[in-house]
Image (cartoon, rainbow, N blue to C red; front, side):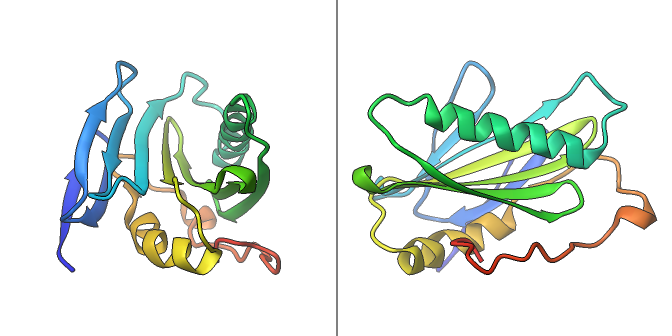
Length: 167
């Protein structure tokens, strides 16, 4: 399967050639969609004003905000499985099973920049099928143009995901 690299001001993602850039919202969030409209991706970066915050604090705040945004959707009951996946990095796996709707949000914080990539599975069938389609795309997401983490903070840490739906 061939892929295409898409880039924004501070992000990069590799998506299958059949995906298309469907829209850019007024807020600057880019939206991509699969050819069959089963999957979507909302991706953006933010330049946060509080430069003194630790990357882990920032990612925790964005995790809470991502979950609250979904919880505020009318007629949807979400279960969330948030995981810190490394310094300044997290995944939030959210499922509205009655709606067969899953959202996996990848967060990367390297203050002052924060990247949020929310992959939507609009016709969720199973964790295996959803992960099979989205995991490689999720892993291709990168924050570019940000300061490198200090040597003491580099490297991913295991997040103990025994009951995780993402890994």
